[in-house]
Amino acid sequence: MSDRFAGVNKFPRAKLLSGPTPIEKLDRLSGELGIDLWIKRDDLTGLGFGGNKVRQLEFYFGAALEKSADTVLITGAVQSNYARTAATAAAKLGLGAVIQMENRVHGMDETYNTSGNVLLSRLLGAEFMRYPEGEDEAGADLALRQRAEELGKEGRTPYVIPLGLNNPPLGALGYMKAAEEILQQDDGFDSMVVASGSGQTHFGLLAGLRALGCKTPVHGICVRRDAATQIRRLTTVGEYLNTLLQCDPIVAVSDILTWDGALEPGYGHVGPPAREAIMMMARKEGLFLDPVYTGKSFAGVPGLVREGRIKPGERVLFVHTGGQPALFAYQSELKL
Ligand SMILES: *Cc1c(COP(=O)(O)O)cnc(C)c1O
Image (spheres, rainbow, N blue to C red):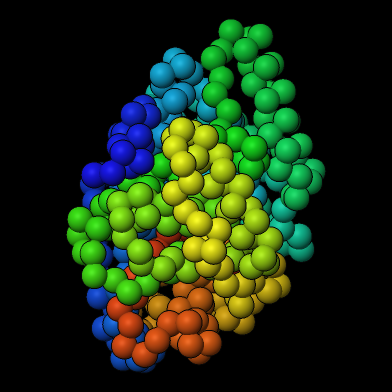
């Protein structure tokens, strides 16, 4: 194993994953799309309703426990899977959770504000606060830190899981470990396709593969920002990751691939390509995608085939990052 990868194992990690997630063949969609299509079932990471955040949070909770924290604070959209998963991990580990809900997605109905992940986080006993903006990561983090300071004065030991770019990307380490897991299961893929939001999943996967000497292209499908903006974001995530691991750059900027053909009408809204992808996965494979992330990221597979960036017959791994609880909050937007 290369030295760059060994660095990952030095970070404290709370055990939240139930074990390796399966890689399965998608037979009917392979036929439909003319490729050899497989799925990494990271919707089955084991904690709560699963998803990619379980892998990321192993490292954040590892840090929180090392600091003897008794409360974690996290920010996100109202239907944040990250917040729900953090509240789930907190419950399991005996910590409190504070969730800050940002006003990030507009024009949504009552179900959006009460069902899906919000319902689950209430069940878990999380404390809620609101943040009036949706595009102000630094401000959202600052509001969390202010709440943490108040909690500290009350005698609690808070740990903030930050959202903004200018923080050590501990979550990316979870996807470096996922890259190792995938290569141990099957190292014969021609390309991989994954959602690219904060970028910790996409960049972590890419960095993990490269640190282990694997050159498979990783297509990051934009769920929040356009393709060029997302490459700049990932470049910054990479710089912070190098600092965190105290190593030379693992990934060349030219190696970062993004596609934003399913981004419209923007974060947290379901456009026609995502809606079609959700239907196709349900009706051809009996698997559920989510309205915010994997609907868009799976739309990238036919999109990249159409544009010739995935070639006919190519052996492709789609990484399912979870998020299905949000389906129940998006009933009206899905127009079924
Ligand atoms: C958060 C999330 C993503 C995006 O992951 P990032 O690491 O933020 O890029 C993708 N899919 C689901 C279901 C998520 O909850």
